Image (cartoon, rainbow, N blue to C red; front, side, top):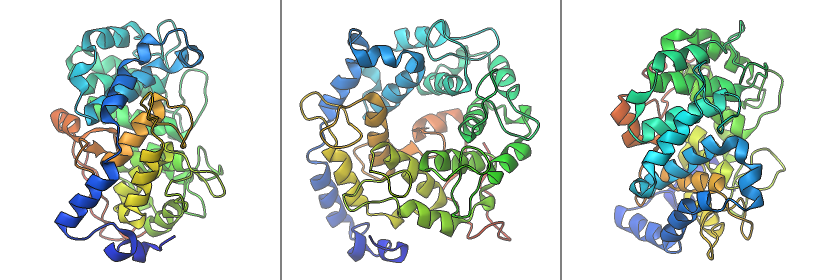
Length: 362
């Protein structure tokens, strides 16, 4: 695989070149992309109520709606979704404590509270939300060390730090928590390899790295990151097949196309991987009979990998898709409508570097 310096060379990696040749290559890469089939795949998910997959994902239906709706928006087809039914479902999952659950009659959780807020932002319905109540619920999950639990049962994870900061930034309520404590906890989860884990001492993992890098971006603490060291770790996730894995010695998976790319995008290092090889891998993971994208070629598609595959293609700059914000995992036009400032790419050069650029505030 090419080194970061080689990846910046258009000849070495295929990441650059003249505008006309790049457009032609993009058309060739996406020639086999099955947009219409993916749209029908997503629209048909709520009709497959007799399948095993439908029932075993009952607990995370809220996130499933977020993945499907955001994917449809990036494909330019959000208007085909049943907005009225979706908004009703979201509020049917609302609890008096201010949190949302993953499905009706389930317990509230920070993961699904973020998904609910993202859905409302996507459809322009934030005005229907009791922002103070939701912010109070989220803020109430912050612990003395700055970490967040996912719910009242007490599990701590950097995923929840990201969810809290993301949710409160979308609500315009970051002042309801101790942001510095939150980012300090995330920084304590940094490892010798530059990556981040779920808690201090846990191994580096691409999913956690996205959560930590994005959380630090929202908390205006990106200068806590060793950008070059982490960039190396992330670009080394690309395998000869073009796909990305989440940890050393693991297999490729489409979902890491998002986890790795989003972090690289925030850090301004997205050119450190081969763009066309990754895009080609994602295209090979399409189900050409039923639509949707799977984790690897020939496997069963699902809405999770479909969303992350399309989001990755957007991050790679293919003009066929609406631009996605790598920090908030929402379309850029949605972030603009909310008035939330752009927090990427980071321009700093090293850990706690003097004169590191202000990343702005949400």
